[in-house]
Length: 189
Length: 444
Image 1 (cartoon, rainbow over the protein chains, first blue to last red):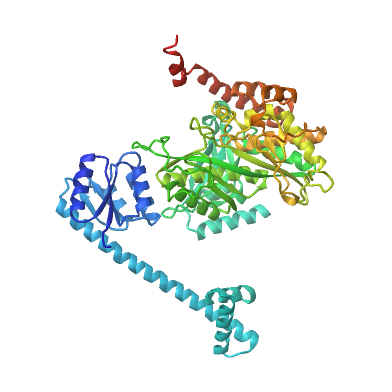
Image 2 (image 1 turned 90 degrees about the vertical axis):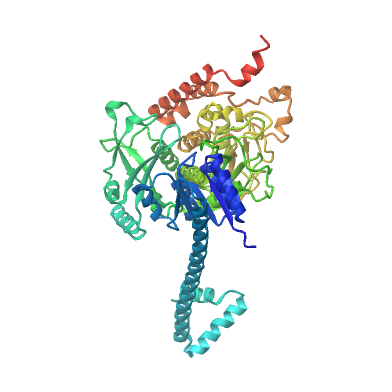
């Protein structure tokens, strides 16, 4: 299943129809929203790959809504705007992807921006996940080393024996070895 | 100096956490949270009690000629807002003081603190556990709340994946991060209605917690494209939202004094007297536990809300229920309050009622064991069971007759509460509702 889900949030029903219809033809699964509240509700229930949002979306502040969508890791947002001023560029800097569509909309260009954004976000997320994994394994490694040090000192054993002790405890208690290490550090460290 | 140490510790913490904004919060007389936002650079000034504001622009505060007030932050209430990560924000709950350095008597938090001192003097501490209900509605295309809900689940139903449930879970995560201990959370009786219960604590902490809770629920709902309301009865034909208060007294060594091994119901004399006090003053404190015109649309028969002033150890229909748990969990559950109440004033008034019972050794009436909703009018009259006020106007009249409850509020708070409520009642009385049009337009 490679079908990407997109939310088109625009208060103008004609725009929703044109943009939504076009993206559907390009093979995306499109959901629409006509105001800020429903943009949040739809996005939270379908967890789309991308949200395309008009900056003048009714019923609230589109920039705030976009902030919530990205802060809560629901999706990434690209804006549609009719006003390319400093204020807009400033807001853009804090978003996941520095990409937007200016009015009047050129549909082919929009398609490129959407493809570009979804691919970049996927790559970014992959990298983020990798970094997170590395960070946790590094943290666990440090914990293990400290716990081993404590065991070596307390029981006067070799490093291998200390590791064996930790592994046995982890297996006996059915908990991950880094949790055992953490408990030892907490109690004796 | 302890305060000095706490202050330095807080300043260090704020720097470590890279905070940007601090919200100084206090509550006005009608129970609305007010917020003065300062940047982190001004925090030291705030902690030195130098932040002033204009009290004349706040409901129920002061006249224009005495408008300067100080905000005195309570350092123990420092809490980081977990949903802010772009600009980090935190809050401090404050007491309001006069320019001459005395506590301002129109600040509800000061009113409760004064009452709690009185209890402490008698050798007790009030512990309170609230059960707060609320509705989640969708917003419309203009961002305004509607009456449309996102689910049709009933009480305790494992709802289909619905936005309301998701939002409730996010609320719980946020509240936990803010130090709340959540006891239970579930879908309530009506569509879109939810309840989150948090652990009991001493009265002041609980009142602060209720205010914080309402704020968190509203903000998280908004982040979900929903509107949370604590209005007591937003929809005709379904249950309203209550805020049951589980009340217990402990001595200064934290032993529950409502518990007793000798009594049939395992309740102490103190518990019975407290209960007697609640029964006696119920008609008067209702103006504070149910302070809006809309509150009285909830207190009608048929929707699990109490109507009659009675108590029971088992039945859930009367005003007071004694939950089955004993020992440290022995408590009295007052079922009439609703979440539109100002928690500081509602607790002040109910506590005063209970204490009056203890001081004057008031015995409660006999308990009712049958379902009170099914009792006929004759039986109710025969047993001498009184009912709660039927509207805000009657509640205010009852309050005006009760010197004990009035004195617990102090002259200032009492007169402001009454003025504000009378204004509400007057406006409401003038209004011609759809119900009247449907009923009378053709008929007459």
